[in-house]
Length: 622
Picture (cartoon, helix red, strand yellow):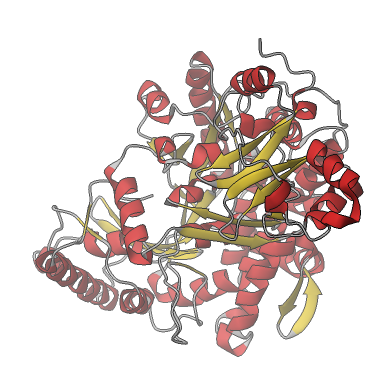
């Protein structure tokens, strides 16, 4: 999430001061480009590994800061939510066995973290979106207590002027309103970096944009969110919507999201990309220790461009341009932000090598992408790949082609040539790219997850299936096998093994009627669907009553004389409810004490689920 020691730009004088530094940074960057003050003809790779922390019950943990302190290693840092951590890997020159070195470091650091986690009753898992995450873990009490994260939440809400709306359509649909940016914390990524020569930056950047669709399609690993089957890589839609600062308007105007693929092919230099972002996005944050970059440059030093980097850190391009300075040497690089975490370290490293091989192996014909491909085709390819994964049909150089054919016939040969050109060892090239080839012909992480989730749902309720899936992901990761070798799962029915909250067992697939509906319609629905409890809502979607099997039978016994009655006339208005966070044992006690067959589950005044005696059968909670 970038720089931590920041504050929100609130006062006019703060904004003026920060903008001055920002413009100075642009001038300094352009001067450095002109005078060849940025490292040239050197390729380096780097990566950031995000991972999830889970409890022994396979649900999100809440002890990220505690584990971070006990790990005591500068490679590790916090993330937005307490159940995520990130490790920053050392950069390496692109040569020889650099990918093996990165892989070994990831494994060593994860083992170090896992050793500490185990002592603290916690597990570590790599996954784009943790299957067992629920709305319970999206409250502000799960946000890491860091000034930057609170500032991000306050600023995005202030800019929107309202809560956040998530609407994602896939096989299922997720429509939900939320009061914080914490939905963004559902996303866990494997962010990869490639340093490139300044003179080739724009050509490299445009090529990175062009290959984003097919690369994403073959790497997809995040098909589930809150138990819904959505996109093959749901992170793409989720990230954009979860921190969207745009507001609705009656005016027809274009507003670019801060999470963006872009609007057109890049031109000029990296400075032009930064300029466009400054034009389109207001400065959100500032900090105290910003240096005057032009003054540093005049004195012969290499500036950090702190203001520019801070602003760039609030604009979430899927391919992000980056500037860095270390030990008096400046460089520019491209950060690939769309690759998900997992399914295994081997898969992540294969994705890394595949992308770098493509970048280095770019054929001369693609040096000027504007002459080869329409930008909107590249953008559409990215969205299609996020939706449908490797089964997507993309437009490549004006022709329709599947992700699978494009990867096998065109992109893998380019990647092989690129890694060979970079001097990577043959054994590493063959190992990593063979994983990509076999995954293309076999199954991606997203496909494995959906097939097995559907299989598990045939014999389990939703919560149990999500737990079993998460447990299997964790087990398979410890075999070190890539996902194309992961076995299929068979459902083994069990009764809510780790459920302890009402939200874990409640049904969200509800039959609901309105209080103004005809009673005859409501009772007919109960008969047709063989449901014994139907919640009643008003026009505002608030729970106002309940129809039970007893009400239905009484109404039916009265005959046709009462066909004009409304639901409000026959329902009970005295409804005992619980919240999603209510302990199951407490819900059972309420139902026993009042001899109720069901309990509506509400969040505020709004119905979010229902639990019945059937849901509680077999549970042992005292």
